[in-house]
Image (cartoon, rainbow, N blue to C red):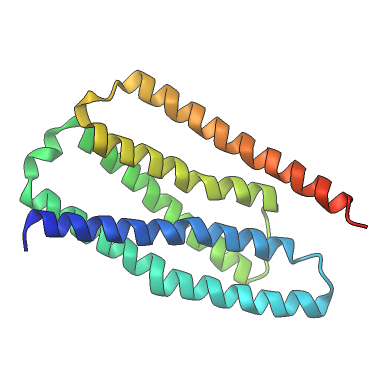
Length: 183
């Protein structure tokens, strides 16, 4: 197997992992928003969301995470000089942050299974966007490597995060306005 084969697999596993990282918090939002419903509906939805969350975690997210790490480590084994480059060191720091995000999502998953809802749907919508910030950061680091101007990169990342958080809040207001207009 060549480096390019490993790289192709790495990209496929990263995409699979991020699919789960994007969808799991969205399920948390739906799960949380179902809490005020009548008991019968809430129980049916709770069972369904719990099933989806468990399947997503066990069959997609966790295997994709391990395969991403394995193929990434294999690429570093093939090209160990990358570990001396600043962009790779920063990328690996973001990957550690992404792992923290992954496992904190697991903690939220276990709490929700116990019917402990400590975050509002808005807070969970914001949590859902954290993965986007990681994706943005990692992709730009990998693509731009040493050509990245670190100061503008950090400023751009912060602006991007603020833009995403603002979009979530605006979407919430629009959704609330539409719900208020239902005849």
